[in-house]
Image (tube, rainbow, N blue to C red; front, side, top):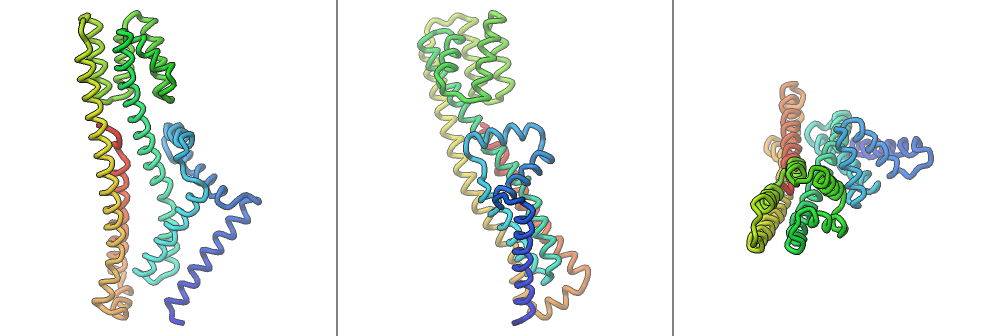
Length: 304
């Protein structure tokens, strides 16, 4: 058995030992649940305070990772980082350091994921709010009554549902819908929200008699906008998949370099400190490239 095979055995043993230690320290808890609980603790400490409510909503929607998925993610990141860094440096210590760094980035990636899911949820809620308010208004010819109909229909979920209740209360308290519209347009900065509110404000202030055509045009605009957003979401998901594949392939460029130079020549180069520094830089830059791509993919999803 060669040196590489021996070191890989040590890596496997180290991973097993880590899992055993974690399990023993879990006081009889399920290992997956223990990892998930500790990951949650990290989220609560490092993430902005608003993230707690966002993640709670994702849990309520049943879209949060299960304890098994948390453990699998941590193990996959650690194993992948260890293997890739070992192919670059043939060092167990360096591989373990990179494995630890890979696991440390998981809370941030899951933070981005939860923000994306929450953004998608809010967009869908706003779509329901605007479409149903227009339909209710066509029947009641009253914006406040339309809001009450949407609120009582049960089609909305918090926080949008609670904000619609605030709009209703503000309208009755102030005697006008101006403050209500301003409140909702400011909190949910969507094109369809502002346009619908502007239309209702115009109808209310000018007393338009025939609003059917305007409401129908507004409803069609919303449908077109929503269709474009969902199409863009699918395109972004496809691009994201290809982007991740490309980023992972870049990690294996060292194999091509070793093939061109020969393993012994490459090992001699690793003894030079500036060569090691260059390789570390390549790994870090490529990792930053992937993280920045994840950030781009998960931000502004559902926005217009």
